[in-house]
Length: 556
Ligand SMILES: Cc1cc2nc3c(=O)[nH]c(=O)nc-3n(C[C@H](O)[C@H](O)[C@H](O)COP(=O)(O)OP(=O)(O)OC[C@H]3O[C@@H](n4cnc5c(N)ncnc54)[C@H](O)[C@@H]3O)c2cc1C
Image 1 (cartoon, rainbow, N blue to C red):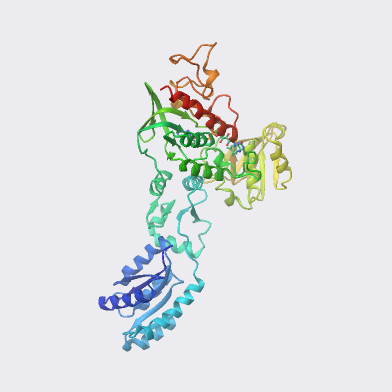
Image 2 (cartoon, protein in one colour):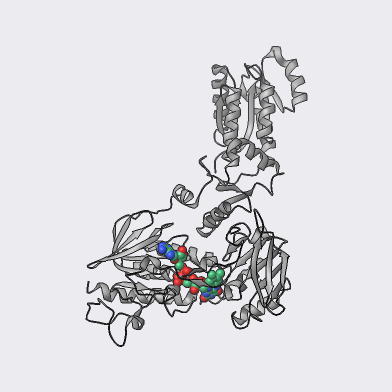
């Protein structure tokens, strides 16, 4: 935690040096002592300190300075740091003027030059001022701060990225906190840059204007380039299946890398509460599960490249070579595809335009708090929708689950149906489909078609979370890896046709259970044709596949 600052301003360099020396010798252990020889420069410096979220305990200025006198400086500085104690340095001749200025300008104290000995004429009074300041001092937040607006898709994307990657940050909604004095001061200190939202402020003073997840990832030191170009095992996708494979692979000595496009945890990372994963009787959030798995994998030496996307694959003899979105390549002996599924889009007018501005796909755990006392619409009837509804119900005035069928019973687990029944602020709207989203800058209304009456109802809505099933995105594997007509990857017995091994298969054995039509290329979890779409089954497949990989590697 950086120490609070004592700032002294004097155009006379000898006096400035003397005051800095005396302040440092007495207070250097607990405070940072900074000096400036110009009041204008000192005001600029204060703005920079405000943007960095540094605390200033004391402003000490000489009264007689060219361009701006001490009182003028302290008055201007109060606009930036109102809580800092303010003191003047004056010559004997200026005492009367200083006293009247003190009364008018709300200055806490004045010191006469020279102040020798400081033990009598400086420290006792400063001790008093600083004790007073300490009593009201609350250390400022020291992590990353994101300034933006609730309805900005770019702000949402950034917050979602930081939250899913477990990077602590403070969110400052500059619209809803527009009347907050501290937000105003921060925006003023930023000047014209405050218009380039979202603004990301880092504790070292760096800032990103209109920051993107990729820029933030680079700044916080996420690794997106591999340490070497060759691995025993490369895994695409850091969901439960990929993470489990990484833990087992690396713990059994395989040099392993994971390539993850968004954030480790995958779909599970978006779940507010997983209650059916073995060993966690009270349930745990997907974020927590992902965080634990990442720590475990790193402990065994797994390398994470994230955010990074695999965009192509080719086979060269025993090598499986993957192309990455940044143009780089990674070569490996065994390649595992664990890319899961992505949300199916809701095909209705207005939905695409308002995505990130009231319309969200998936859990939207970052949004839950913003929906306080509002009506939230959850679209879909599967477990993911049920979990999200339970989470939003903690904050929202009312949660409405819109389902096309007559009830949740055929699509949702009974434990969730029971929880929903017992939650008074969740309502089910059956036989209903959203056919349009309305709003200019953010969602304002939705049109809902009721299948039983065939009527269209237009209702006010600020947030709509869509959970209407998911599909794999595996186009980048086309031509190399066999997939079904929906893009799910075929493995094991599914790549055999009438007892015949896949085309081009040259090994003297059938493909292993989780192996594709390419030897040494495996698929696990939700992306696999016929898989059970659950955390535990993904984890199971990822772990089991490593056994097949050992067998494969023993003959490469
Ligand atoms: C909101 C929600 C709640 C759920 N709740 C439960 C529950 O309570 N219990 C339960 O058992 N299951 C639950 N599920 C289902 C469970 O999360 C999934 O079955 C599980 O996450 C699948 O794991 P996976 O590793 O196969 O794929 P995913 O979790 O989908 O992970 C795939 C990962 O691959 C990455 N990726 C995709 N393409 C690329 C590429 N080209 N390059 C790099 N990376 C890529 C993605 O970004 C993603 O992180 C829930 C799902 C959701 C969405």
